[in-house]
View 1 (spheres, rainbow, N blue to C red):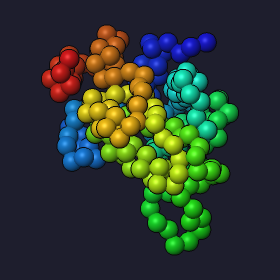
View 2 (cartoon, helix red, strand yellow):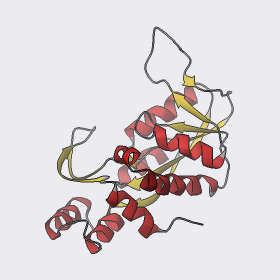
View 3 (cartoon, rainbow, N blue to C red):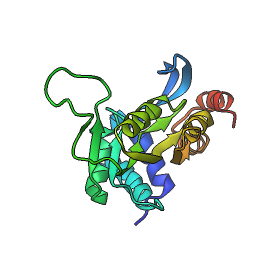
View 4 (cartoon, one colour):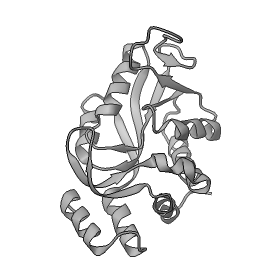
Length: 200
């Protein structure tokens, strides 16, 4: 059975995945509404709803990937769950050089020419996903698709399109914020602040 949007939204709300207040972003900016899917590992039921949602997105792709690829590290538990649900193997990129242990470009087995699907939680500028795409392509994988759960800003999707990656997403800030406001998950002040920042 497909995961309904209301169930996904409530799972994110119940697991405290939405954070309010001025929060620093990786790109050096600040946001009034931040998403932390890492909290879901403490909420098994809600984690399952999100993992099911991702798996449905993967299975709905027009071309089946040969390998799932995570953007380390926060999304890794979800990609592990997606692998189990879809039976598509999963590899983890090693973006930093190591001088010990496994020194291959990925953990897991892969071959050049395989089609990879990059998975992350949210997109703002797209920088983290681009790093994984470029790393994967350097080592011979074909990467033309990406999946995220939540779109924060359109410029991340545009940045990925510029390098030949179609980034699909399940929901976005306006839809989540509106649902959370309607179900007691945001105050009027928090909602109005989000509307100003995300222009909806």
